[in-house]
Image (cartoon, rainbow, N blue to C red; front, side, top):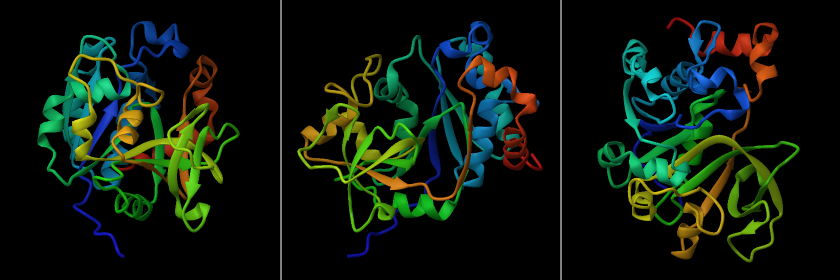
Length: 267
């Protein structure tokens, strides 16, 4: 049976409320997504990537040094995006951050899918891969990880016809969501495709809720008979500044320089 592709993905939620402790002392006065790399804050490159994927409306959440993001909506408009901020008093982790963004959630149609991603991971992916992944996301499987292969590979997967076709998430690390035996593994690329029906599984605004673990958002989905999926990201470019050494060595990072130039070319 062919799945309906559903409406195009035009909304994205960008997580930017963290403390950025691994980048201290730089993040003591500037939130990590607002650290500049080659003349732009990291999160602006994320906005450029979303624009390339056809996203139109972006909500960025902020808590730590939230005033640093005050100019981001204007920067988004210059890129042709509608960018709104969701300011919260403290980080609430993935499920709680999303629950706090009530205005963002209210704008979603009942069958909309949206992207959820970090505000400090730079990437380019093939839009056709994203469309194929989004076509798999439904009320019965409202959450999907784009995955790639790394040394860690903490996501345990039960595949469909092949690993290249993606599959169903059965566990992360030591935690299992189903009794199925995994036959493949992968790592979170940093982009999730989420169905609007996720709203019914979120906590009350202002409540902390992690993504995974016994009391996390994924556990709520599986307890209600739903599932989370995985889908291979395919060919990609990706860069993440995860340490002080990464940040201080950015000028000499040719791959990072090339990716940032392509992401916001002409912007």
